[in-house]
Image (cartoon, rainbow, N blue to C red):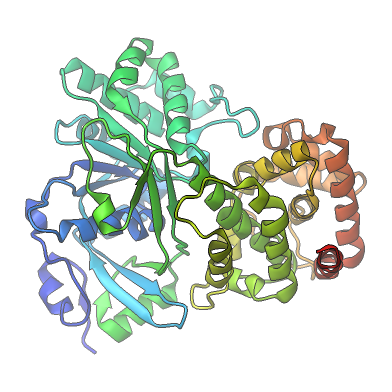
Length: 498
């Protein structure tokens, strides 16, 4: 098959193979600025906007994508070369592929090259919403205390160099300062990251920075900027070279960075937009008064489930999530964890079949066509564990209920942090706290409790005798018997109790 590069000029030719935007992209205003134009944003929010723009007479909800960090240069260059276009490849459970070209990103900026251009865009009168996918670590807070990290060198740099910031808070602050100075309306800042109360966290962190950098701006932000909470869900693995090659071979599309994802998608949003919003509900999003119950469900089941599969699977030598999910011992462990430790804490889930959701999770995790890399899922576990796992631990301790499976996972993480799987092969650990994790993990070989001394992750959890006892026993069992045998023993004991 003759192939052609993905760009505006070649859309007609490409339309003979896959669906392409049917709206006039040149007439679309970029009234949404999105920071963090990685795979998840392009599989999720941009996909919703693309469907919305196909509705008649909608011309003002296009996206200006901002690549914030130096290492984002590749995605920026790819989008620039492709006129903001990319292919979304949906991998169904049966292995079939659904493909379409997404055109929602109509502008694209690389912040490190010209910070002032990004600040001016955020301050533009036409921009009404600024959305974020900057990962859990991008919010600059201490996981144990939830306080803003004022000692971060990048934060100190931004305070001293307001016109050339390096963090999201520096950019937002200067843009909002311009809006106030020019007498413009405020805007909505919407986090789309996996943090419970992500809108509340964004507001708290931004105002903490503003108190350092531009304290006189605080009152204006309180009155003119809204921060809706939201819950986002779509498994989006890293794009592989094979995905790129297959797209070219089968569909004739030369796409430098297509996005691969599952068919499932969910977006639950608090309806709190101070200067208007897109009608996302017409393309599948759900607006609710309180997002918190849905966030808890997703973070403590899906995201926590990913951490379970990733850490246990890594130790057992698996490289992809589907491999771990299709191991009967691990999948049974995860199901028991969800049923006995997480589900009792979930409530107020209007319109959600919890049993059905858990069953669908196991199917989604086991999708052998997704091939989500375990090292991606385990990356930055020091930021994920406090969000996905520890709230369940604290709540269960308060209820004096089981914490066996969560404690086992944390014990496995301590062993994982040594950097080798059970076969002695090196693990690729990507974590900003990698050095400290290894140091504590090494000392934990003599005394497992040492790992719990990482206060920025675990807070005062080491003071819980109940948790320490279960955790220590789990650690010893993993060292003595290995992950799988220890899991099977746990599973059998739990099933005998039911």
